[in-house]
Structures are given as C-alpha cells and as structure tokens.
Amino acid sequence: MEQNDIVYGVHAVVESLETNTGNKLYIQDDLRGKNVEKIKALAAEKKVSISWTSKKTLSDMTEGAVHQGFVLRVSEFAYAADLSVILEKAEAEDNPLILILDGLTDPHNLGSILRTADATQVAGIIIPKHRAVGVTPVVAKTSTGAVAHVPIARVTNLSQTLDKLKEAGFWIFGTDMNGTPSHKWNTAGKLALIIGNEGKGISSNIKKQVDEMVTIPMKGHVQSLNASVAAAVLMYEVFRKKL
Image: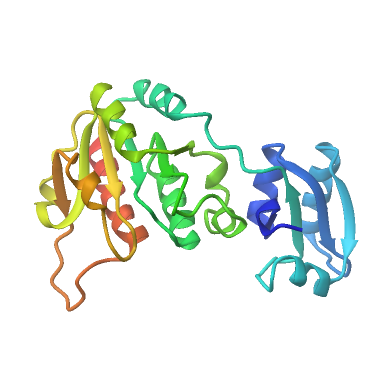
C-alpha cells in the first residue's frame, strides 16, 4: 500500500470519512472505547468497510507512525481544481489572504501551516507541483483535519501564478531578513504572502515579483524562525487587523 493512499490517527481519519474520501478502514483489533464506537458508526454511515487488524500490521502500514489504532485507505487527495477556485473564494472576502509556499519540503511544516490557515481564515494555499511537499498522510495528520477545509491549489509555474494574482489586484509580499517590520505591515486589501523554502528561503526569480518584503523582528541569537512558525506569526498579523 502506498503511503500516500492512507491517513491515520483519530482526527485525520474522522475528517477524511466526513469528507467522503475514505475507501476502507482498518481498526486495531483489540481497541475499545468511545473513539472506536464513533468511528465505526461514521464508517457505517459512509458505507466504508472495516477490517479489524493487528497493531503490528497497522504499524507496518504506517511505517511506524503513531496511528492511534486507526488507518484509513483514501482516494488521492483532491486539490482545488486550479487557481480560479481559490480566487473565487478570495473575491467573496474582505481583505483576503492567499499563502504561496515556495518549495516547502517538510510535511510537518505544511500540516502546521494548514492548521493555522484554517484558524485565521486564509482563503487558500498555493503550492508548486515539483520539488515541494504535497499533501501526504503526515500532512493530513499534522493539520488535525484542517486539510479538509482550506483549499490547496497545485500549480506548475509559481511565477505565472503571481502574475495572475497581480492581475486580480493582489499585492505580493515576501518574507526576508530585511523588510517592513511585521507589526508595521499594511495588511489592507488583497494580500498574497510567499513563504520560502526551509533552508534557502524565497527563490531569486520569485523575489523579483514581490511588491514588498516583510520581516519578523527578532532579538535572539538565531537568524530565522521555522517556516511554519514564521507563517503563523504573519497569518495572525493579518487576522488580528481584521478583528
């Protein structure tokens, strides 16, 4: 079984069942309790068959990850059809924020970003098809279900996507060591925020299309924040000004 064909853990399994992406459910054969009853009932409601499986088999299926006794085989993750789906959602909002992830490779970072994006009402997330992490079981689990609520579009060309966002009236912001301090960032209007790769930051060709760089003030000894933490700080900066 392909790792990309499964989700595991209580939250991820419940969310996937609720959004009708589950095909077959595997439950640890000696597991008891309210989670078992709840997930069993949900699987029955969604007409998903259940296979009672040993803990060892579930651990083999998830390559030793923490599955909490639940593994669900799912259809491939349904990305938003294209950019237009996210733009349509953004147009319906005041001061929408779209996140662009430029070559993020760590599934835990993507999962955490999705979780904060859901909490702060981000209109959508754009990721490149190549040389970047997509939605994997680890992403789904780390996002604790947010993956089902935030539209994600995969695009072949980030540079062309930024041009389309500019045509639609979006201001493009990047994150950098030298830029406008985040607390002085003018977040009025339509915003697109680029979060760069964990090690290299925003790629140089993409940097040329940025209207303004934003920096998170820091006074400690480290030079930068983790990508998902930096994204969270900036998402909350935009969200705070909407409240």
